[in-house]
Image (cartoon, rainbow, N blue to C red):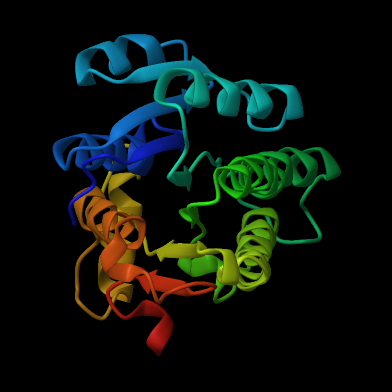
Length: 240
């Protein structure tokens, strides 16, 4: 799990699973650049002792600037974590608006594509391999009927990961996806926590730290024979 000497960029790193991952990486010796749209990102990065760049993952020029900043600060990119995402409106396909569909897919799907595209391009230039971890969801592996946009975008991330993870495997660039279940964070309403605790076979929600530790494993050299995988961390939800 040692990341000493590694340089990482984390989109969505100012909150949620991205923030938990940033903390884990720093504790394990990595240099970290948080790329986030939040105005609070700089203060969070200052507190953690890492770098920050304000980034809208739906804008190609912002992702290019993120890569340039990482190379300027660290001289390289060894690890990418594409964790920026939104949930969108809770609607099935009939009641879902085109506006919501485009907004969710722009962040959750196109944002991952752009992040992977430009960080993998940099890794190829370096010629030393690298590890890319995309945040998908258990709802990219099984359906969530009342949030069609989110389910579709995360399903896209899973197959994007499989394609990219096989295309560059020979060059030592590994691309994997983490597919969390419902994670216990302040953003989840209490009634939803109770509901999903019952639906997870383990009888509880996951924690951000548990997900961050899986991401750490995929980032480090101990997982060097894993690529193109979509790994659930969902307390058994998708096994049923």
